Length: 437
Image 1 (cartoon, helix red, strand yellow):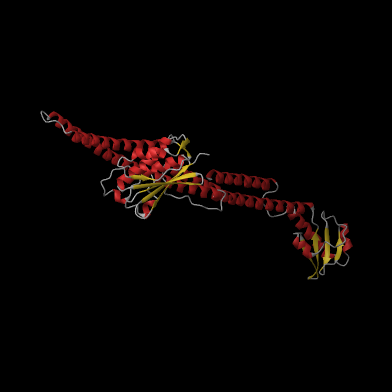
Image 2 (image 1 turned 90 degrees about the vertical axis):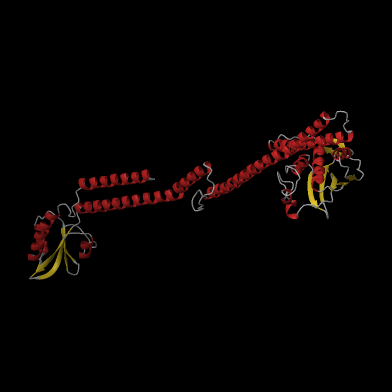
């Protein structure tokens, strides 16, 4: 805006310099009407002669005064005029108002009338010029004041809001999201400033979510490192112990049951590692939007085989499965049910009851244990990514907080649903499995 104000000032100076030049070239700055001094001399001559011949003013017609004039009595009655007139536009008040030269006529020391010179072209030109100069001066002042006020309006309603938005954009680009953008709906950017500030709030929230996600991922890496280390250490210890017994066997044969127990222990630890790695892989693929499901029509009886596959403790009792077609990805559904049963083994360790019933376009599958359940304030969180309840930190149970999250995500990808609720004693997981169309 500095350039704008400099331009306005420069143009204003040029304008008034031009006006001054016009004034000088058309007669200067004198307040006297050109030729008025000569007129005053002539007016004095006329006044003197009029006083001498006031009884017969027609005698004045014999004189050559070089100007037109009129003589009035003190009541503004026209007594004599050197030019044709009806007398309507001649009076002492008219003369005073229009700046006409006039003089008092005295007879025997008494004012008897007035001599008024006619408004000639020089006088009219002078007054016209004076009005023109005055008008141009006022117009120039008004123009400059208007330009300054317009500049102030532009500065307040466009330039300053635009500069604020530019600074705001710089703050956003620099990651400084704490400073709100001042909103003024009175300027043309009012609606934009409100939208930009909403964007800032969303970016702030997104950044906080990103920081929180990064923190949780670091915690997950640390936790997984610990969780992987535990079964790996168990495998190493069991393997070393088994090797030591075989090397020290000599004539003493190794007890087959003891050998089987050690092998089972190695298998369980390896299975823990496999599950942790599988969950982490599934979570990563889901973030990359590459975790695909390929649903086809399958018999509902395959649910029996899936449960049997994961029920290695034989804690599950299942109702009869309705013989209907379901539209699923069998491999992904197996992963869902495996995660649920594994969670129940880990946190409840009780018998698990499974029931089925068709509901509209779904096969409703309920999986219920008889453990302590989940605190009500955590129930809506247990399917969140990396979430592990408050009681987990004080327990010896291993886990990544991904099992139910992956299960819910896979069900949604198959157009189904996973619901969790407390049912008396224990946790109830309901799977809504889509039926074949």
